[in-house]
Length: 551
Image (cartoon, rainbow, N blue to C red; front, top):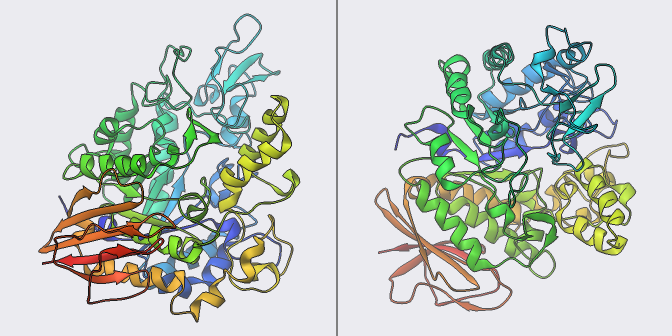
């Protein structure tokens, strides 16, 4: 496959609202990120992905955009943004921004004009429909609960919002909408942006019949009438031609409803569409019947099969994006690891796994410290619209408050959105003021200041593992072969190519387990304990992870 900087790079995701507050208003901002540029560079990462920083009323923490070409006042100014871009580029780091164009804010000038009347020149920039039998046009449900249609008293029609009512869906059938989006993208590229993470990109094209979901179809089923719609590929190819061509940039699409086959159609190297995508099959490994608020224990054998399917299925044809958490998921060490007895060990094991898979790895802020989920006592401590809506619906459905909070403690998006833990001091060193959301109490032990001086910390292991990946291109471009397929504790695989053959072994349990090196001549190069050049023993301790060279 073609070589590229975005294939060989490691991405660090920053949630600006929770990263660092520079002006004591309790909200992270661009100048806070500027203060921490040297820290970010010290990780060894190559690319930063910023969650939305555009002007927004924050009904969904910036994913409801009021003005695509201005910065949210809480975050700073365009001058701050320009300084941030320059600071990243001086350190050899590329900057990727969030592109949210399935929907805008209901406060966007386009939508405010669209709803003035049925005769508005921007009426067709959004999706308006007449009601049916005194109710919505169809039974589609919104991602955050309730109907996906909102009635507008002024015009007597409904508008579509697949997310919150304050996030009306743009009408991509209208060429004016598309060309305005492409022009906006080019202006950001000219400002120095190096690419876009494209929010829910697979939802842009809707089935023109607006049919009901069929029996068995969930909201983001691959066949749902607004997922991978009939013109999606046409739109993305047009975006490539009109917005991306001529710029050396990367694209990664958030892709609800993606199967391996659909992914190959969207990001296949010869397709001329997107560079890579985020699929959600692994993120659903602990859901019951596709419902994230109903969870089951993670089955390692199933988890391995999912990862293998994507590693082998994309190899040589398309590029993987690998992640165990982001701003929409709980903390990886609390979900896939053991944040009680083996927090440090399991955090390192998950980082080693992520950075050993083929594809581009994404690390979310605080993951490099082993930050954990937070268990706030009261629903009033939560800020996420999805969490708050679930809580109301759960209680209305007869679920006890204890059970609802148990699910929230495990799965809420706010687990990932508590402030970055810089020190053991007041507000974790995030802000001089009370933060917009509470700080995790474990910041007194889990923080950058503590981990900088600890050679065995998760932070220093992250740096070592990123350096190791960069020194071993086989981890980027090599083949993948799963070993110990049915083992319920051991995740082991071979990476081969680029003149190397590496064995990766991870004990994903709190018990001792046998490794996969029997009969192989293996020399350990890297472990969670930092050992190098040691003949590989057979047994792995709890959550022990290692990479060995095979002769």
